[in-house]
Length: 362
Image 1: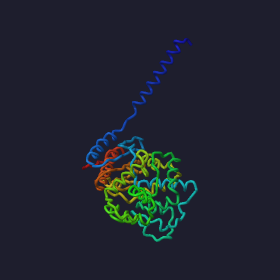
Image 2: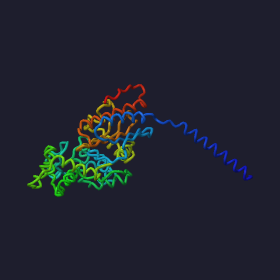
Image 3: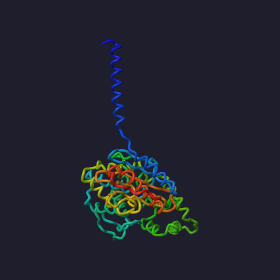
Image 4: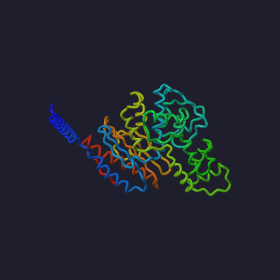
């Protein structure tokens, strides 16, 4: 074939291929919901005295929306989702079983919600029940007993092994308290579980003075502001932290049941669906009929609610949100609830066109 004719043929074929590609691209329809959600999120952010990060993904279409979603945020008790994943990872590998029993000791005493702190030392409890208590009522005893059984490093290793990057080091909840108080006095890292429990029984305003008493410091002028600064320093260390993008990727795999086998994947979802905390957050303004598999987290000037919202049984929406630096917890809860409502408003018409959603009232 003559050289010029060959070039002509190649040119024609290239033009045909480009034309077909362009035609295929023209058939792609971008969703409008992220535009609508952006409008509502900006309005919500304007009325909030803190900051928040948000990641939303419609798993069915793979379209997503981000707002500060690459910013690392302290997860508080939302870190219990990675802990749960690590436990099931050990089950999947045959290292432990859900029926294994752990004996509670006096060293397992923790502050916070849940009833396990009321059980006497020597009580035996199964791994499965510990998971239930950790995810349903955010029991801190359950969490740290699981971390004692596994070691915190196992959580970090499991996340990396499964390809979930973007999480800071995971520590026990006992060490969270010690690491905060350490920024008031280095000796606080040696506080016993009972001493930490006593500290958290005291009102926040007097907690710093209580620490001075426990450390036998005679002359002390610590105030609640000093403890607030200690928390700020701790948050900058990024332990038990992650971006909402990282959390969203983990939630997506849980929703798609792609991490372990079918049985264990279903186990994880059921634990998250049983969550009873955070009634005024993502759950607060959406219809009761909407299933929400999620986990909340709360600490000083930090609040999270991350999970999977089911507009239909097979239409999961990932919603991961954390807020920080607010003055009142009630304002943070309202903000998270408003975002949850906004997500529902903009996405539900795609799956239930006949449904009329109520407008947001800020």
